[in-house]
Structures are given as C-alpha cells and as structure tokens.
Image 1 (cartoon, rainbow, N blue to C red):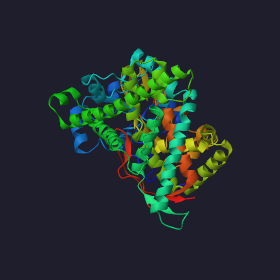
Image 2: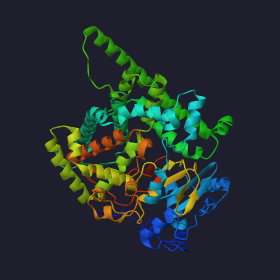
Image 3: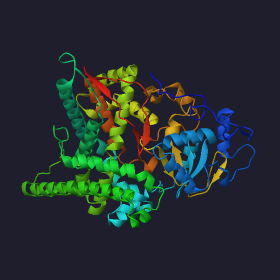
Image 4: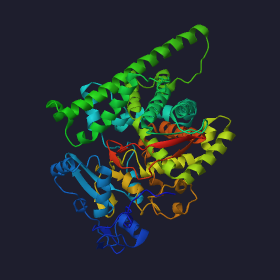
Length: 540
C-alpha cells in the first residue's frame, strides 16, 4: 500500500520533532518527545503524578493578542492552510494548545483520550461552535434557523424529529434505493462518455478526466432525490443553469465563511464589506433554490393527497425527507424549510470532495482497490439487487470511506463546550470553554495510528493489531461525522451515498492515476484539493 508522503519521527504527528511541551510519567517537562508511554499519557490526563493541576493560563499558546494573530493569519495565508498550521503547532507545543484569532478563542487537542474526556462532558444539549456569519444571515433575512444553528432544548426537540427521517434504520431503508438509482445512472453516464471520448479498443476503452464537476452534479442529484423526492436531470448533456448556480453558491458560501468567523459580521454588514456581501448573496441564492423546490414538493404532496381522498387509495410511495416531514406535520413549515435548506447546502461539497480523494487513493493503491472490488463483486452477486444487503456484505467499502476521511477529514475540527470543568493533559479547562478536537493532525499522528501516512482501510476491520494497541479513547479516532447526539444530521445520507457510488464504480471500472504525487490541500470551510486529481477510468 502506498503511503501518503511525509516525514516521520514525532510521536504526535509523524513529522520531525521540535522543541515543545510534554509531560513524562514523573510529571516533568521534557523538550520534545513524550516519554513513558501510555501510562504517562493516562497519568497526565487524570491529573499528573505530582498532584498539581496546572491553570488554564499555563496552557501553551500561539500568542495572547487575537488581533495580532489575525493579522498573521491574513498575511501568511493561514486560513487556507489552517490544517497544516495546526499540525505544525501541535508538533511545536505538544498535544494541547490555546489559540486566539480575532474574536475567536479555543483550546485545541488531538489525542483520543483527551477527546473522550471532552465528549463525556458535553451534557444533554451539546454545543459546537456557532457559525456566526450563517446565524447573522438568518437574523437579518428573518429566516428560521435549522438545527445546525440552534442550541438547548429547542435544538433537541427539532433534532429528534429530523432523526426519524434521516438517521433511523427505517428511514435509511426508504432512501437507499433512491441513492442506488442515482449511482447507477452516474455510472451509465460515465460509461457513455468513456465509449465516446476514450482511447483503446471498443469495450475496454480508457478515459482520463478530472471527475470533480461530475461528482458535484452527482452529489446534488442524489441530495435532491433523497431530500425533495425528485430527480433534476443533472446527468443530461445540458444540465440546468439553475443547478450550476446552486453549486457555485454553495462553494462561494463555504469559501467566504472562514474569514468571517474571526470578525463581527454585523460590523461588516454596516460598512458594506465585499466579503459579507458575497457571503450573504450566496446564501440568498441557496435559499431561493430551496424555496422553489419546497414549493414544488408541497404542490405534489397536496395533489397526491387529493387523489388519495378521491380514489380511496393509500399510496405508499416514498416522498423524500421533505415529503415525510410535511406529511407528519411535527415541524412548522418555516422550520422544515430552514432544516431542508441546511441539509441541501451541507450535502454537496461534503460528499463530492471526499469522493475525489477516494478515487485518487484507490487509483494509486491498486492492491487495496482490487481487494475492495472482489468483496463488492461477491456481495453484489449475492444481494439480488438489494443495495442494503450489498453494502452489508462489503464492510471494506465503509472502511474505505473511514480511511479517506481519516486522511482527508471534510471538517478539520469538531468543537464542544464542556458543561463542567475538566482536566486535559494536566491543565484545568473551565466549563464553557470552546475545545476543538483537531481531526487532520490526529489522523496523521503516529501516537494515534500505526503507519499513519499509509492508506489502509484494513486498519478499521476490528481484528487488526492496531485496534488493540493504541491506548485509551479508541472510539474517538474516527470523528469525521462528529459524535453523539450532535453528530452530522446528514451522516446516513452521506455515508450511503459515497459507498453506493464507489460500489458501482468499482463494479464497472478499473481506476488508475496519471500522477501518484500527494494531493496538496487547502481549507475553505472544508478540506479540499488545491487542484482536483485526474483519474483514469478503464471499462471492465
């Protein structure tokens, strides 16, 4: 298996050690390396052998002045390279550090044992960082907020209703056939393109392309089918301008969000800052797109109910997440609109981009690709066309997605505000402090993963040597979709969407890459390739 390129040596990140803070089992500070093994880590986390818990102000930090730090971020382009900045900072300061950038303050951690402690203190109503630019847009446009932007009992009440339609196994069984249909149609479109534009003899042609535009269309088509219950025809030779504008608006919204996190949005609104105007305009277009789809779905549902009344039939066809929410009537129309819009805005890039990374890694790790394909073939042949049975019989597919998201997490952090004081790395963390679990550095840390730069879905098999050897917090090494009650509300849609598309691609095509060089990445609100990888599809 090919390794993701990088240097090794640090027990935190797999990069060269530098001067930094760590505790030994004896409770002393050493220059760069954590000595004493897992016992030392456990002792430190629980309070240290010397019995003295250090104060919050003693946590290593990147500078006390948030505005100076903000200027550095702008000057050194750290917003786009935030994942690398975190990696370097952990290597320099150790497994915990404080950072203040503009108005935003956080404590950053990467070890699963500390992340476990954090999540066990999240309380009944877990909070993550509020994306204030998004919240401000809802407020000034008088839109209701969805669960992504809510907290407390109001969040919990709405979330429980949404879970019934997007998280429960009964809901998954309902929408899996829709995702399977779109995945098959995508492969049919790709087949036709390879035959039309590819090289080689008929029936075994190859085509090298940047698949990212097609993957974005796939993600939008799949999301619309599941959420609105309708196809929008993005695989036609001339997809609609409306849909292309929606994809553009989502990308613009994601790109403009990070800089706005560190500045007061209402101040930028007052002075008419271009950055805010671009952000708000992008959201306006996203809402307009969702409003039109919701209106059409409402009309379809009303018409269907009228027909049932006249004919006396019960129907029974799955109407999509939107239709289910409308039929059950547990949420107001405004709340349905708010949550459906958030689901759509969060359901395109967050699946299309990981699929780019997945195709790339399978294309340059041919042994892994063949192992996954063999399992998929066997499972598909035994499933009788049932997508749920096919996925259940191919656990390597799910492991492949987990491995892709370990190396390339969509969101590079997961945040929580502990409801009680906790101790992390022998430091006192007051209740209400924003603590970030930093997924990109954790995924590439040799303290957490054996051979962390190697692409190896087998490490998630449950029987690998690694599973029994990596210390505390084992359940907190894979957090790309978050954790617990506040995990990603679209998780089941995204996981199954990506697995089904990979399954059908592997059944129909051999994947290779013209260049196996590591992909350079940057961060908008999500981790993305600087340049989308080119993939060679060869018909099987």
